[in-house]
Length: 103
Image (cartoon, rainbow, N blue to C red):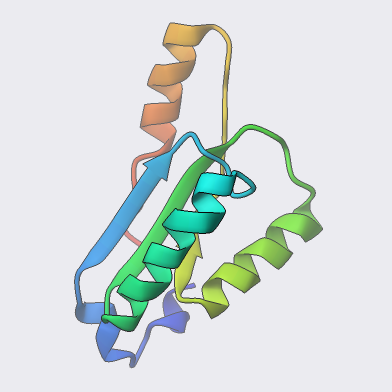
């Protein structure tokens, strides 16, 4: 994924990371979050969307969604949502949701 931005002057600009429990299929994400990211991308910002998806997606579906978002300038880091046990799951999700240097 790093090669996507190599040579692109926007890669050196500000990056925004959005971590949430709203999955990609949620109306709020479709109508507001993704549209805002496209606007920010056009303003030379990198956008990284890291949702904790409540449903497990097939690998082909993940690939299709990832490529679609990447064509809009959005990096999608799909994370698995863990519901139980509540307290431990939240701690685990926070640890797993930390951005990597490549993001």
